[in-house]
Amino acid sequence: MERVVANNLDVARVRADFPVLQREIKPGVPLVYLDSTASSQKPLQVIEAMDRYYRSSNANIHRGIHTLAEEATALYEGARKRTAEFIGAARAREIIFTRNATEAINLVAYTWGRKFLQPGDLVILTEMEHHANLVPWQLLAAEREIRLEFIPVREDGLLNLEEYDRLLEQKPKLVSFTHMSNVLGTINPAEEIIRKAHEAGAVTLVDGAQSVPHFAVDVQKLGADFLAFSAHKMCGPTGIGVLYGRQELLEAMPPFLGGGDMIKKVELRSFQSNAIPHKFEAGTPAIAEAVGLAAAIDYLQGLGMEAIAAHEHELTQYAMEQIRALETVDIFGPEAEHRGGVIAFTMEGIHPHDISQVLDTDGIAVRAGHHCAMPLHLKFNIPATTRASFYLYNTREEVDKLVRGLVKVRRMFS
Image 1 (cartoon, helix red, strand yellow):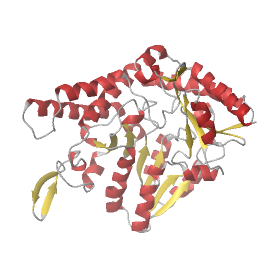
Image 2 (tube, helix red, strand yellow):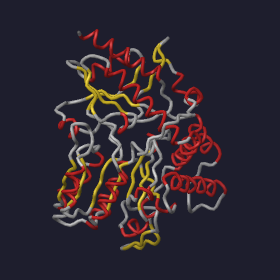
Image 3 (cartoon, one colour):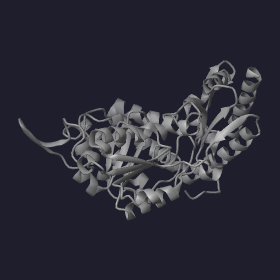
Image 4 (spheres, one colour):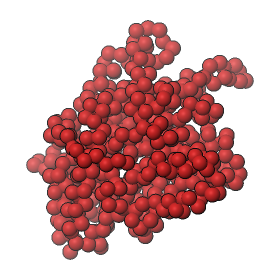
Protein backbone atom coordinates (compact mmCIF):
# COMPACT_ATOMS: atom_id res chain seq x y z
CA MET A 1 0.00 0.00 0.00
CA GLU A 2 1.30 3.48 -0.89
CA ARG A 3 1.23 5.67 2.19
CA VAL A 4 -0.52 9.04 2.05
CA VAL A 5 0.94 11.90 4.06
CA ALA A 6 -1.80 14.53 3.90
CA ASN A 7 -4.74 14.14 6.26
CA ASN A 8 -7.73 16.31 5.42
CA LEU A 9 -10.31 14.38 7.43
CA ASP A 10 -12.57 16.53 9.61
CA VAL A 11 -12.98 13.97 12.40
CA ALA A 12 -15.27 16.15 14.52
CA ARG A 13 -17.70 16.42 11.61
CA VAL A 14 -17.40 12.69 10.94
CA ARG A 15 -18.16 11.80 14.57
CA ALA A 16 -21.35 13.85 14.44
CA ASP A 17 -22.66 11.45 11.77
CA PHE A 18 -22.50 8.42 14.13
CA PRO A 19 -25.32 8.37 16.70
CA VAL A 20 -23.76 5.67 18.88
CA LEU A 21 -20.65 7.79 19.44
CA GLN A 22 -22.81 10.25 21.39
CA ARG A 23 -23.65 7.51 23.89
CA GLU A 24 -22.45 7.38 27.49
CA ILE A 25 -21.78 3.85 28.77
CA LYS A 26 -22.74 5.13 32.19
CA PRO A 27 -23.38 8.68 33.42
CA GLY A 28 -20.39 10.85 32.62
CA VAL A 29 -18.51 8.04 30.85
CA PRO A 30 -18.60 8.47 27.05
CA LEU A 31 -18.11 5.55 24.70
CA VAL A 32 -14.61 5.12 23.29
CA TYR A 33 -15.13 2.62 20.49
CA LEU A 34 -11.87 0.88 19.54
CA ASP A 35 -13.30 -2.32 18.05
CA SER A 36 -13.92 -1.43 14.41
CA THR A 37 -11.87 -4.37 13.17
CA ALA A 38 -14.64 -6.61 14.52
CA SER A 39 -17.45 -4.35 13.26
CA SER A 40 -17.62 -0.65 12.47
CA GLN A 41 -20.27 1.77 13.64
CA LYS A 42 -22.90 3.12 11.21
CA PRO A 43 -23.46 6.74 10.16
CA LEU A 44 -26.89 8.33 9.93
CA GLN A 45 -26.58 8.32 6.14
CA VAL A 46 -26.63 4.50 6.13
CA ILE A 47 -29.32 4.17 8.78
CA GLU A 48 -31.57 6.63 6.99
CA ALA A 49 -31.07 5.04 3.56
CA MET A 50 -32.21 1.67 4.90
CA ASP A 51 -35.11 3.26 6.77
CA ARG A 52 -36.17 5.08 3.59
CA TYR A 53 -36.17 1.82 1.64
CA TYR A 54 -38.40 0.08 4.19
CA ARG A 55 -40.73 3.05 4.43
CA SER A 56 -41.21 3.67 0.71
CA SER A 57 -39.88 0.94 -1.61
CA ASN A 58 -39.94 -2.39 0.23
CA ALA A 59 -40.73 -5.27 -2.16
CA ASN A 60 -39.10 -8.39 -3.57
CA ILE A 61 -36.89 -7.88 -6.58
CA HIS A 62 -36.37 -8.91 -10.21
CA ARG A 63 -39.63 -10.57 -11.24
CA GLY A 64 -42.22 -8.08 -10.03
CA ILE A 65 -43.51 -5.50 -12.51
CA HIS A 66 -45.28 -3.20 -10.06
CA THR A 67 -43.76 0.10 -8.95
CA LEU A 68 -42.33 -1.02 -5.62
CA ALA A 69 -40.72 -4.13 -7.12
CA GLU A 70 -39.12 -2.07 -9.86
CA GLU A 71 -37.86 0.50 -7.36
CA ALA A 72 -36.43 -2.21 -5.09
CA THR A 73 -34.76 -3.91 -8.06
CA ALA A 74 -33.22 -0.63 -9.19
CA LEU A 75 -31.86 0.02 -5.70
CA TYR A 76 -30.44 -3.50 -5.35
CA GLU A 77 -28.79 -3.59 -8.77
CA GLY A 78 -27.66 -0.02 -8.30
CA ALA A 79 -25.85 -1.15 -5.16
CA ARG A 80 -24.11 -3.83 -7.22
CA LYS A 81 -22.95 -1.20 -9.72
CA ARG A 82 -21.72 1.12 -6.93
CA THR A 83 -19.79 -1.77 -5.36
CA ALA A 84 -18.16 -2.65 -8.67
CA GLU A 85 -17.07 0.95 -9.16
CA PHE A 86 -15.77 1.16 -5.58
CA ILE A 87 -13.31 -1.71 -6.01
CA GLY A 88 -12.49 -1.07 -9.68
CA ALA A 89 -14.27 -4.14 -11.12
CA ALA A 90 -14.69 -4.10 -14.88
CA ARG A 91 -18.33 -5.23 -14.77
CA ALA A 92 -21.17 -5.09 -12.26
CA ARG A 93 -21.97 -8.77 -12.92
CA GLU A 94 -18.60 -9.66 -11.39
CA ILE A 95 -20.06 -8.67 -7.99
CA ILE A 96 -21.82 -11.42 -6.04
CA PHE A 97 -23.71 -10.47 -2.88
CA THR A 98 -23.25 -12.94 -0.02
CA ARG A 99 -24.02 -12.83 3.71
CA ASN A 100 -20.47 -11.81 4.64
CA ALA A 101 -16.82 -12.29 3.66
CA THR A 102 -16.81 -15.73 5.27
CA GLU A 103 -19.58 -16.94 2.99
CA ALA A 104 -17.83 -15.38 0.00
CA ILE A 105 -14.68 -17.42 0.68
CA ASN A 106 -16.73 -20.55 1.28
CA LEU A 107 -18.49 -19.97 -2.04
CA VAL A 108 -15.15 -20.09 -3.85
CA ALA A 109 -14.02 -23.17 -1.93
CA TYR A 110 -17.26 -25.09 -2.53
CA THR A 111 -17.74 -24.17 -6.18
CA TRP A 112 -14.43 -23.28 -7.83
CA GLY A 113 -12.50 -25.55 -5.45
CA ARG A 114 -14.70 -28.59 -5.88
CA LYS A 115 -14.70 -28.27 -9.65
CA PHE A 116 -11.07 -27.45 -10.32
CA LEU A 117 -8.99 -28.90 -7.46
CA GLN A 118 -7.90 -32.54 -7.62
CA PRO A 119 -6.18 -34.81 -5.07
CA GLY A 120 -2.60 -33.69 -4.59
CA ASP A 121 -3.17 -30.13 -5.81
CA LEU A 122 -1.55 -27.43 -3.70
CA VAL A 123 -3.29 -24.45 -2.09
CA ILE A 124 -1.04 -21.81 -0.51
CA LEU A 125 -2.33 -19.80 2.47
CA THR A 126 -0.49 -17.80 5.16
CA GLU A 127 0.02 -18.27 8.87
CA MET A 128 -1.81 -15.02 9.61
CA GLU A 129 -5.17 -16.01 8.10
CA HIS A 130 -8.51 -15.47 9.80
CA HIS A 131 -10.32 -18.77 10.37
CA ALA A 132 -12.65 -17.79 7.49
CA ASN A 133 -9.73 -18.29 5.10
CA LEU A 134 -8.45 -21.44 6.80
CA VAL A 135 -11.37 -23.70 7.66
CA PRO A 136 -13.05 -23.75 4.20
CA TRP A 137 -9.79 -25.01 2.69
CA GLN A 138 -9.27 -27.49 5.52
CA LEU A 139 -12.74 -28.90 4.84
CA LEU A 140 -11.95 -29.16 1.15
CA ALA A 141 -8.58 -30.74 1.88
CA ALA A 142 -10.26 -33.44 3.95
CA GLU A 143 -12.78 -34.08 1.17
CA ARG A 144 -10.51 -33.84 -1.88
CA GLU A 145 -7.07 -34.65 -0.44
CA ILE A 146 -5.62 -31.37 -1.62
CA ARG A 147 -2.44 -30.11 0.04
CA LEU A 148 -2.23 -26.95 2.16
CA GLU A 149 1.01 -25.07 2.66
CA PHE A 150 1.56 -21.77 4.46
CA ILE A 151 3.68 -18.69 3.93
CA PRO A 152 5.36 -18.20 7.32
CA VAL A 153 5.02 -15.04 9.39
CA ARG A 154 8.32 -13.58 10.52
CA GLU A 155 8.95 -12.32 14.06
CA ASP A 156 8.43 -8.75 12.83
CA GLY A 157 4.93 -9.60 11.63
CA LEU A 158 5.71 -9.57 7.92
CA LEU A 159 5.37 -12.52 5.57
CA ASN A 160 8.45 -14.53 4.63
CA LEU A 161 8.28 -13.95 0.88
CA GLU A 162 11.48 -15.94 0.25
CA GLU A 163 9.63 -19.01 1.51
CA TYR A 164 6.67 -18.02 -0.68
CA ASP A 165 8.98 -18.13 -3.71
CA ARG A 166 10.03 -21.64 -2.74
CA LEU A 167 6.42 -22.75 -2.33
CA LEU A 168 5.57 -21.39 -5.77
CA GLU A 169 8.08 -23.78 -7.28
CA GLN A 170 5.58 -26.53 -6.39
CA LYS A 171 3.06 -25.06 -8.88
CA PRO A 172 0.06 -24.31 -6.66
CA LYS A 173 -3.43 -24.10 -8.09
CA LEU A 174 -4.57 -21.39 -5.69
CA VAL A 175 -2.98 -18.72 -3.49
CA SER A 176 -5.42 -17.30 -0.92
CA PHE A 177 -4.31 -14.66 1.56
CA THR A 178 -5.42 -11.76 3.72
CA HIS A 179 -4.73 -8.29 2.39
CA MET A 180 -4.43 -7.01 5.96
CA SER A 181 -4.13 -9.04 9.15
CA ASN A 182 -6.90 -8.53 11.68
CA VAL A 183 -4.41 -9.19 14.49
CA LEU A 184 -1.01 -7.88 13.41
CA GLY A 185 -2.33 -5.09 11.24
CA THR A 186 0.17 -6.15 8.57
CA ILE A 187 -0.68 -4.84 5.11
CA ASN A 188 0.59 -7.52 2.78
CA PRO A 189 2.09 -6.67 -0.65
CA ALA A 190 -0.94 -8.01 -2.51
CA GLU A 191 0.10 -6.90 -5.96
CA GLU A 192 3.46 -8.69 -5.69
CA ILE A 193 1.92 -11.84 -4.18
CA ILE A 194 -0.68 -12.00 -6.96
CA ARG A 195 1.82 -11.33 -9.76
CA LYS A 196 4.08 -14.14 -8.58
CA ALA A 197 1.12 -16.50 -8.17
CA HIS A 198 -0.02 -15.83 -11.73
CA GLU A 199 3.50 -16.42 -13.02
CA ALA A 200 3.33 -19.84 -11.33
CA GLY A 201 -0.07 -20.53 -12.95
CA ALA A 202 -2.18 -20.11 -9.80
CA VAL A 203 -5.55 -18.44 -9.24
CA THR A 204 -5.66 -15.89 -6.40
CA LEU A 205 -8.20 -15.03 -3.70
CA VAL A 206 -7.75 -11.95 -1.51
CA ASP A 207 -9.47 -11.64 1.87
CA GLY A 208 -10.19 -7.92 1.79
CA ALA A 209 -12.32 -7.74 4.95
CA GLN A 210 -9.73 -5.51 6.66
CA SER A 211 -8.43 -3.63 3.62
CA VAL A 212 -11.45 -2.53 1.58
CA PRO A 213 -12.92 -0.45 4.47
CA HIS A 214 -9.67 1.37 5.18
CA PHE A 215 -7.84 2.23 1.97
CA ALA A 216 -8.44 2.24 -1.76
CA VAL A 217 -8.51 -1.26 -3.29
CA ASP A 218 -8.60 -1.71 -7.07
CA VAL A 219 -9.02 -5.34 -8.13
CA GLN A 220 -7.83 -4.70 -11.67
CA LYS A 221 -4.69 -2.93 -10.50
CA LEU A 222 -4.01 -5.75 -8.03
CA GLY A 223 -4.79 -8.38 -10.65
CA ALA A 224 -6.95 -10.28 -8.14
CA ASP A 225 -9.03 -13.20 -9.41
CA PHE A 226 -11.30 -13.19 -6.35
CA LEU A 227 -11.80 -10.64 -3.55
CA ALA A 228 -14.03 -11.06 -0.48
CA PHE A 229 -15.18 -8.40 1.99
CA SER A 230 -18.05 -7.47 4.34
CA ALA A 231 -20.26 -4.39 4.57
CA HIS A 232 -20.40 -4.27 8.37
CA LYS A 233 -16.70 -3.45 8.66
CA MET A 234 -17.01 -0.44 6.32
CA CYS A 235 -19.84 1.57 7.96
CA GLY A 236 -22.50 -0.63 6.33
CA PRO A 237 -25.00 -3.10 7.80
CA THR A 238 -24.48 -6.66 8.93
CA GLY A 239 -25.91 -9.47 6.81
CA ILE A 240 -24.32 -8.63 3.47
CA GLY A 241 -20.88 -9.31 2.03
CA VAL A 242 -19.29 -9.24 -1.39
CA LEU A 243 -17.45 -11.67 -3.59
CA TYR A 244 -15.73 -10.19 -6.60
CA GLY A 245 -14.71 -12.71 -9.21
CA ARG A 246 -13.39 -12.37 -12.73
CA GLN A 247 -16.21 -13.03 -15.17
CA GLU A 248 -14.64 -16.05 -16.86
CA LEU A 249 -14.02 -17.73 -13.50
CA LEU A 250 -17.55 -17.13 -12.23
CA GLU A 251 -19.07 -18.40 -15.45
CA ALA A 252 -17.07 -21.62 -15.17
CA MET A 253 -18.17 -22.29 -11.59
CA PRO A 254 -21.29 -24.31 -10.65
CA PRO A 255 -24.00 -22.72 -8.47
CA PHE A 256 -23.44 -22.54 -4.74
CA LEU A 257 -27.02 -22.80 -3.40
CA GLY A 258 -30.20 -23.94 -5.12
CA GLY A 259 -33.58 -22.25 -5.19
CA GLY A 260 -35.26 -19.19 -6.58
CA ASP A 261 -33.52 -16.55 -8.69
CA MET A 262 -30.45 -18.70 -9.42
CA ILE A 263 -32.30 -20.61 -12.13
CA LYS A 264 -33.17 -19.98 -15.74
CA LYS A 265 -35.38 -23.05 -16.18
CA VAL A 266 -36.55 -25.84 -13.86
CA GLU A 267 -38.10 -29.20 -14.69
CA LEU A 268 -38.91 -31.98 -12.25
CA ARG A 269 -35.59 -33.75 -12.80
CA SER A 270 -33.29 -31.00 -14.03
CA PHE A 271 -32.59 -27.27 -14.06
CA GLN A 272 -30.58 -24.70 -15.98
CA SER A 273 -28.75 -22.13 -13.87
CA ASN A 274 -29.09 -18.41 -14.39
CA ALA A 275 -26.38 -16.13 -15.72
CA ILE A 276 -23.95 -14.44 -13.32
CA PRO A 277 -24.31 -12.82 -10.87
CA HIS A 278 -27.76 -14.29 -10.20
CA LYS A 279 -26.46 -17.87 -10.46
CA PHE A 280 -24.91 -17.40 -7.02
CA GLU A 281 -27.75 -15.51 -5.31
CA ALA A 282 -30.42 -18.06 -4.47
CA GLY A 283 -33.57 -16.88 -2.71
CA THR A 284 -34.64 -13.45 -1.56
CA PRO A 285 -31.44 -11.47 -1.01
CA ALA A 286 -30.54 -8.86 1.58
CA ILE A 287 -32.17 -5.97 -0.29
CA ALA A 288 -32.21 -3.36 2.46
CA GLU A 289 -28.65 -4.33 3.38
CA ALA A 290 -27.54 -3.76 -0.22
CA VAL A 291 -29.10 -0.30 0.00
CA GLY A 292 -27.12 0.25 3.20
CA LEU A 293 -23.92 -0.96 1.56
CA ALA A 294 -24.36 1.49 -1.32
CA ALA A 295 -24.95 4.31 1.18
CA ALA A 296 -21.81 3.30 3.09
CA ILE A 297 -19.77 3.38 -0.12
CA ASP A 298 -21.14 6.84 -0.92
CA TYR A 299 -20.23 7.96 2.59
CA LEU A 300 -16.66 6.65 2.45
CA GLN A 301 -16.02 8.01 -1.01
CA GLY A 302 -17.44 11.37 0.03
CA LEU A 303 -14.77 11.56 2.73
CA GLY A 304 -12.08 10.12 0.47
CA MET A 305 -10.33 6.80 0.98
CA GLU A 306 -6.92 8.48 0.91
CA ALA A 307 -7.92 10.83 3.73
CA ILE A 308 -9.29 7.91 5.76
CA ALA A 309 -6.09 5.91 5.27
CA ALA A 310 -3.91 8.87 6.22
CA HIS A 311 -5.91 9.57 9.38
CA GLU A 312 -5.73 5.94 10.49
CA HIS A 313 -2.00 5.77 9.81
CA GLU A 314 -1.29 8.89 11.87
CA LEU A 315 -3.49 7.64 14.70
CA THR A 316 -1.90 4.18 14.70
CA GLN A 317 1.60 5.63 14.74
CA TYR A 318 0.69 7.86 17.68
CA ALA A 319 -0.98 4.99 19.55
CA MET A 320 2.01 2.69 19.09
CA GLU A 321 4.34 5.36 20.47
CA GLN A 322 2.14 5.95 23.52
CA ILE A 323 1.52 2.26 24.28
CA ARG A 324 5.19 1.34 23.87
CA ALA A 325 6.06 3.92 26.51
CA LEU A 326 4.21 1.79 29.07
CA GLU A 327 6.09 -0.88 30.98
CA THR A 328 5.56 -4.60 30.34
CA VAL A 329 3.38 -4.11 27.25
CA ASP A 330 4.27 -6.04 24.10
CA ILE A 331 2.82 -5.01 20.72
CA PHE A 332 2.63 -7.68 18.02
CA GLY A 333 3.15 -6.96 14.35
CA PRO A 334 5.21 -4.63 12.18
CA GLU A 335 6.05 -0.96 12.46
CA ALA A 336 3.36 1.58 11.61
CA GLU A 337 4.59 2.02 8.04
CA HIS A 338 3.59 -1.59 7.26
CA ARG A 339 0.33 -1.80 9.19
CA GLY A 340 -3.24 -0.59 9.24
CA GLY A 341 -5.22 0.67 12.22
CA VAL A 342 -4.88 -2.43 14.41
CA ILE A 343 -2.78 -2.89 17.55
CA ALA A 344 -2.81 -6.27 19.33
CA PHE A 345 -0.83 -6.42 22.56
CA THR A 346 -0.26 -8.26 25.82
CA MET A 347 0.49 -6.98 29.31
CA GLU A 348 2.79 -9.12 31.39
CA GLY A 349 0.91 -11.14 33.99
CA ILE A 350 -2.57 -9.85 33.05
CA HIS A 351 -5.07 -11.80 30.95
CA PRO A 352 -6.52 -9.93 27.93
CA HIS A 353 -10.06 -10.56 29.18
CA ASP A 354 -9.23 -8.78 32.44
CA ILE A 355 -7.72 -5.87 30.52
CA SER A 356 -10.83 -5.56 28.37
CA GLN A 357 -13.17 -5.75 31.35
CA VAL A 358 -11.34 -3.03 33.27
CA LEU A 359 -11.20 -0.77 30.21
CA ASP A 360 -14.94 -1.24 29.73
CA THR A 361 -15.58 0.35 33.13
CA ASP A 362 -14.18 3.54 31.59
CA GLY A 363 -16.27 3.15 28.44
CA ILE A 364 -13.36 1.88 26.32
CA ALA A 365 -14.41 -0.91 23.96
CA VAL A 366 -11.57 -3.20 22.83
CA ARG A 367 -11.50 -6.85 21.79
CA ALA A 368 -9.87 -9.67 23.77
CA GLY A 369 -9.19 -13.23 22.63
CA HIS A 370 -7.66 -14.99 19.66
CA HIS A 371 -9.62 -12.89 17.13
CA CYS A 372 -10.45 -15.92 14.95
CA ALA A 373 -6.74 -16.39 14.33
CA MET A 374 -5.76 -19.18 16.71
CA PRO A 375 -2.84 -20.55 14.62
CA LEU A 376 -1.23 -17.10 14.55
CA HIS A 377 -1.44 -16.80 18.33
CA LEU A 378 -0.02 -20.30 18.73
CA LYS A 379 2.91 -19.29 16.52
CA PHE A 380 3.75 -16.47 18.93
CA ASN A 381 3.12 -18.80 21.89
CA ILE A 382 0.33 -16.73 23.39
CA PRO A 383 -3.30 -17.80 24.04
CA ALA A 384 -4.83 -14.39 23.41
CA THR A 385 -4.21 -10.69 22.91
CA THR A 386 -6.00 -7.44 23.59
CA ARG A 387 -6.78 -5.60 20.36
CA ALA A 388 -7.49 -1.92 19.86
CA SER A 389 -8.51 -0.91 16.37
CA PHE A 390 -9.05 2.49 14.83
CA TYR A 391 -11.26 3.91 12.11
CA LEU A 392 -12.23 7.23 10.55
CA TYR A 393 -14.11 8.41 13.68
CA ASN A 394 -11.38 7.83 16.29
CA THR A 395 -9.22 10.58 17.79
CA ARG A 396 -5.93 11.13 19.60
CA GLU A 397 -7.92 11.97 22.72
CA GLU A 398 -9.40 8.46 22.60
CA VAL A 399 -5.92 6.98 22.29
CA ASP A 400 -4.92 8.97 25.37
CA LYS A 401 -7.92 7.53 27.24
CA LEU A 402 -6.85 4.03 26.21
CA VAL A 403 -3.34 4.63 27.53
CA ARG A 404 -4.66 6.02 30.82
CA GLY A 405 -6.91 2.98 31.03
CA LEU A 406 -3.94 0.65 30.59
CA VAL A 407 -2.09 2.48 33.36
CA LYS A 408 -5.14 1.89 35.54
CA VAL A 409 -5.11 -1.79 34.62
CA ARG A 410 -1.44 -2.13 35.58
CA ARG A 411 -2.06 -0.35 38.89
CA MET A 412 -5.00 -2.60 39.74
CA PHE A 413 -3.14 -5.86 39.05
CA SER A 414 0.19 -4.88 40.59
